[in-house]
Length: 137
Image (cartoon, rainbow, N blue to C red):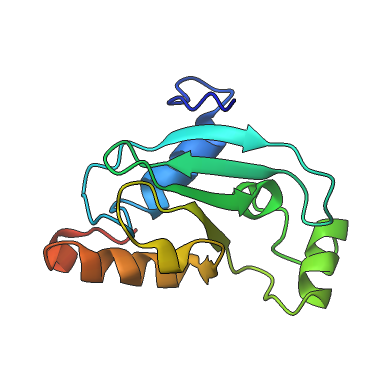
């Protein structure tokens, strides 16, 4: 069973800060207060372990490889960065996969991988046209 929770404090500051800063609107339900909670999935795959992000409103779950979130996949100089490049993905681009649609009803997205930019585009289209109030830092 997974234990999703908000990561306050230093231990969870990287993934919590990443999701809170980069995905301010849920791409599946469109809420501007997703209040993301986090879990980690250990897996024996080349991409490495995953961070899981759960929207408090619809319960959808997004995932991203730990090296993407922590910035270790920016170049091919790292093993995970090289594997990412070899799998046809771009280094320096963050990929997010929809693991679960929650109550959003967006089941066609489950199992699909999107770039962070695409996720935010989906969120902007889902949200109440609130693109003007989004801040880009």
